[in-house]
Image (cartoon, rainbow, N blue to C red; front, side):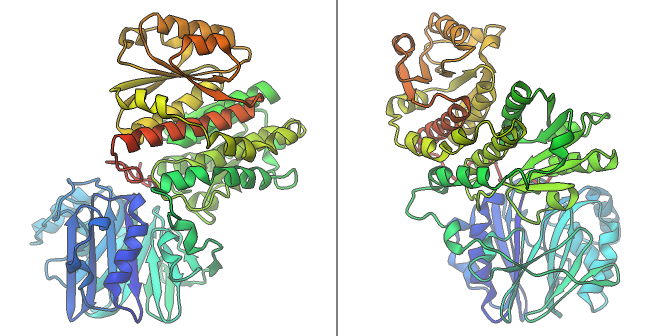
Length: 579
């Protein structure tokens, strides 16, 4: 969730750290802080986000330092709870991403032995443990204390007596960036692209000692030889490129993204597990869960393969793994709940496939096979192009398992999305902007599409939005319908069209304003609804993709109209690395 970064080299560390933290804000932006080593340890930390940085932070001196941008788990967002955290003597300082599950026990023991705590965080036990273990070598101290930590962590530590950074990783991502006479450490590669494209992914249990021109990685006392990899992304891919927000930029990248995702999966590269499977479990969270839900409708109706879709946060409590295959979907590849599902499959000898956007992320190292989404870096917290990439991969899986029946249809996906980017949504945005509650309804595979639409609306506009299978809304939610509760619906020609139209008439009879995505030639629908957003595509797959993009734009323009913080919605973070 949080973002951490470290730098040691020939530059002043503070400006580098702050620049990198701005690139990591999608991981958390409740507070931030930096610490540098020069004549002793200097710290600046503040509630708020790095974009509101004050000059004092950049003024810290030293060519070695660590930084942190926070998504609060233990303790409210405040200056005191912001990282970095110090030991009692002010000689050792730490930043941390993850959760120390046994921190309360450790804290009580440390207090009983005379340690004084300043914050409410779980992280603060780490510098105090290091203080007790420190005998002149920070690496050795870290090696001793990690054995006491239960939970997840990516830790960076510096001390006033050691000219190095010490890093440790367990169940939280951490990558080293290899420059020329400078080294970096960060939660992911995004902030490193400006400085280097050579990286090393640390693995669980790794402890690293980092110097400007060298690094050593250990598992226990054994030195590890980790491969240096070259990243193909460029700094331009994480810039706004003239768009007002990253979210809008990423929405407009989707024609290219969908084509890359579809073409990345061929009959030869399709994992062999798919060929023999008789049943599938998809495990995911948030938007990825909705993509899996759409996949269920399509593969069951096309290929006759039964699919169960499970929330990652609930799957661990289901004691019986279902199916011949588990698919874990995670944009970051670090989603803790989805990782737990993959590991559970491994323990029960069920083949596992990861669908992710990040090469060498944790999920790729645990799954038996990996499919990369090819979406490129996504900065906005609200998933758009990563969701479309997931759909592209899953649609292609269905296509390949059905004998490439939809090759021609999928070849038009990018063009179809490009056309809906030109739609005028002003009337629909006006209706949504004045609402406190919005219902999103659909039938069949459009139901999870509307789940995703409602999620986007609530994420960035802060309007309460709920999705329902259209037939269910009369089983209770009808009591909430009024002239002040708009309904957003998908009503396309197909098997469910007549009953869907009937559902909308029932809602309209309650005085509810209706925004419908439907065929541009549907006169009856046009006369019924308040706003018709026309779709010209006829095939179900293209209708799913294009209606998804319309709902993304509807949420974006509604949030913009209301003056919301688009890329960094309150209380959220993009990479959810805690359970």
